[in-house]
Amino acid sequence: MKGVYWLILGLSIWFVPSIIIRILSDKTGIEAETLPLEIIIVQFVIAAAIMIKAVFTIRKERRARNSKN
Image (cartoon, rainbow, N blue to C red; front, top):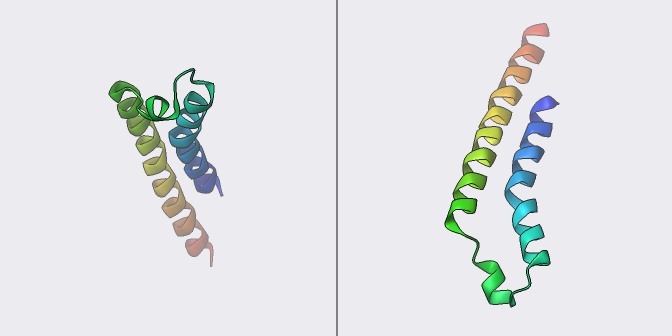
C-alpha cells in the first residue's frame, strides 16, 4: 500500500504547485498558464523520481505478497 501513497505524492507534486501558481497569479489567464521552464523542469524531475520509487515499491510489495502464498 505504500507504493500507492508514493504515487499519489508524485502526482500531487506535479499538479498542485502549478494549480496554486495559477490561482494566486495576478496576471491574466493566458500569462498565468506560462510557467517558467525552470519550475517545470524541477517539478518534473522530482515528480518522476517519486513516481519511479512508487513503481519499485509496488513491485516489491507484490513480490512479497506472492512469496507468502
